[in-house]
Image (cartoon, rainbow, N blue to C red; front, side, top):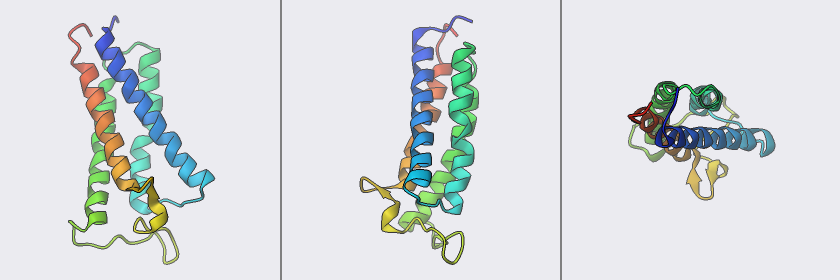
Length: 141
């Protein structure tokens, strides 16, 4: 299939965002030792397949792989939006740690460059969904 530059560029950008987000949360967890809360785990379940799925779509030149990027990103984005609502207090339910001594996203160490991790996740899912959708809009695909 011959995709135009716009569709392929958008899909490549979506793959880069997903890859950076995945590698970032792995770094935060495995290198920095910050355990994710339960909602972060749910978001990871939707983020981790994205670099693989989008990367294989690029490799195999599948012009319609963006639909999987949209689906996974919308689901993960919904969890991230809920998580952000809890974080800022819009949703009147306190964030509970996974265990009594487990992590909580209200801790100061859950900020990256002063930005809360749930917001970073929401931005990554929004970008990935938007770019994946844009890759499907290419009239030459």
